Amino acid sequence: MNPASADVAAMLEGAGAALSVTLVLATNLFVGREPSDPSTCVTVFDTPGRAPLLTLAGDLGPNYHFPSIQIRVRDKAYLDGWNLIGSIRDYLHGLHGVNQGGSLYDVIRCSQDPSFLEWDERGRCSFVVTFDIARNWP
Image 1 (cartoon, rainbow, N blue to C red):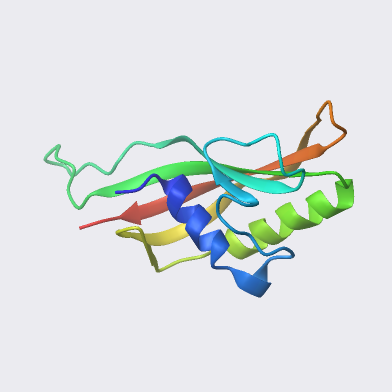
Image 2: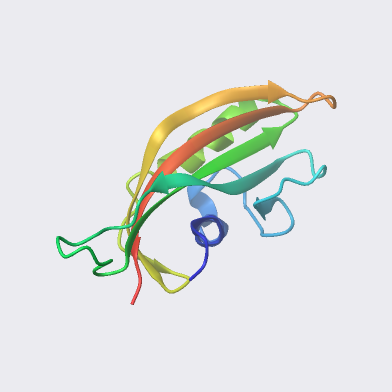
């Protein structure tokens, strides 16, 4: 089973025209670690989610998990970064019934709307958006 960050990055890479920018893994789309370049990039991080599903008998039941991810967008232009993170939110929020990386993603829901994070020492701005996920796997 992949971490949710890797699966969601693959979904973003396959989003095509739904986003304002074409995202390519290891070029302008990254998982778990944001590189110093390129200036415009998207990075997906795993963040704490809810505990896995338990049945009344106390077992894990159907391998149902509730991970959370945070997506960070960095850009030199404030409005371009804001528009990109907004298009990512719009694409992922409500996405459901997606098979990716051996998991069925029943729903992806935006739990924290996009917000400005910081300006870095190279004059680039960063924005973040957070999603809660419901997924299961065989």
